[in-house]
Length: 425
Image (cartoon, rainbow, N blue to C red):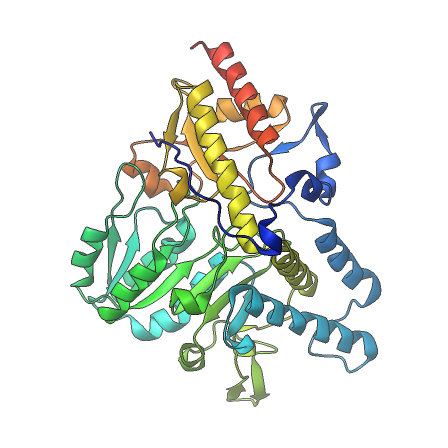
């Protein structure tokens, strides 16, 4: 069971002024919704985040004022759409401190971005007996594409195990690196345990062993400052819908020399420079990887979300979520000591708490909480191997975002008390 430990708050801009989640919450229209006659308590942000009015306005503004295909029309609204779409690329580059805006490739989500790397760089690079190193805590999106690749290429997958408290076994990682893997791929923040992994340390060790590194940042970019240059990784992927943006938006960042050497992922319009009956010439990066008509509205919402988070200040976001996770762990342990909590202490995790109520299936817990307007996740959270490692069929998961408050956690505790009352202590 994890024990919450306090640490000094992460430094914040604007004189260290903390976020006001109640004021932020007012900017999210969905929180005017009621569920079973009660105010919505949304604790499933690790699955998908809610959207602020600024993002909704950006998406609606595109559809209402300049809906046109990007990179196509030379008429006014077409040019306006293209300008807005490409401005998003610059916003995302600033958000993750990419050194070159052309290194940002738009995808539908982190899953597509990982598949892009697996099908392009992976198919060209991985050969018979080549190893790829993953971890036991990976989301299926950062596992299944590599399974398919090594099955096709007769390669090998190796896995960094975790401790019972949810930390990676870096001593075993060092042993696996002696295999000279071609790639190491791992999550920056676990979507189930909340573990914040030591990315820079792991990247440096991988590079010393001659491996490239892919980081799944889906659970990191909404919650912690991300600087891809400081992290040192070769590929970084993330989804928009977890960081206040619409579904269907996401990005792959990769070093320019890697992108230029990789073949296209999908073929069709926009990814070409010239097409003849028997041959084609590819577009420059990043457009070489962006075939077909894109979801411009989702992309524009993606940019609005990045600008919204940058205006809040990601140091302040991290400090707010650290306060929430520490409060949640302390309160759940004090008020409901019969719960089993999974994952490391507050100082080492993002805004995720997975737990179980003894002798109560997580689905039953979630259904009872729903009666009180409380939305949590119940199941394996797309991390079945992790649950197998912990000898669990499923867990309950509460997860936070900028609009989450201590009041939400108090409501969760009250709801869980009712779960215990119904099923018996």
